[in-house]
Length: 100
Image (cartoon, rainbow, N blue to C red; front, side, top):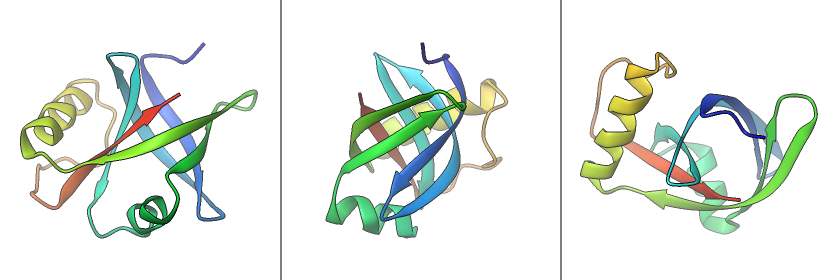
């Protein structure tokens, strides 16, 4: 069972990256910069693997969301959960939404 928020490992482009996440509407969301390598990797192949803790690994489909309203909503949610390393909202942030 996936918790409401926490950290995960994103495996895409043959690299594992640790990221903070939150959940909303049965989807998993993370924040990242729009020019990050993981965004480039997802644009090549949006089929990813997510690990939640040591025992739970799932396949997911990644969708990049750049709509500023949605990004700000997820940013505010993660900030209120004290679950993000982005302390200031900037317009270069995007959301990666995962469907499991």
